[in-house]
Amino acid sequence: MATLPASHVDHGRVLSEAVARVATCWKLTNEQLGSIVGISSATASRLRTGSYRLQPAEKAFELGQYLVRLFRSLDALMGSDDAASVSWLKSENLDLQGRPIDLIRTIRGLNDVADYVDDYRARV
Image (cartoon, rainbow, N blue to C red; front, side):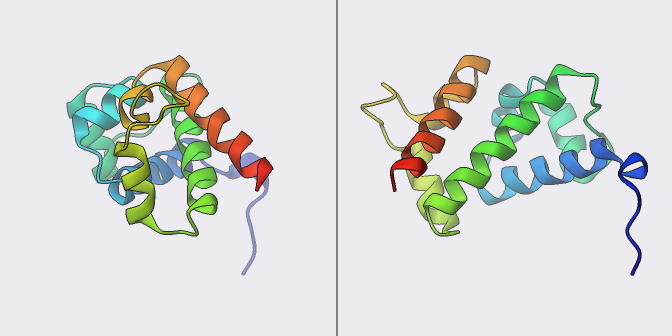
């Protein structure tokens, strides 16, 4: 099987599918997903069905990259246990001063939570 050169990869499609998978694994509603990546609930629904793609020139694309970064880090930390990841996201975190699922709805919160998980993984 031949691989395509990097210039032919549809980054929007790849990231959109990854973001949709994160939303499914974490059982995010369309409203939650939309607020995390900066799109409407209706657009989040279309993203999940594949009829909308994040575009590299948009802020939503960058936020999607941060969401996938957080997912990968948390997945590694939790040993690929989606239920444990969801539990962690929904639990109050004293270090972060809130529930990660609520904090990641802002750009700063998404960045802070991703940094926190990355820093925690570095200690392990």
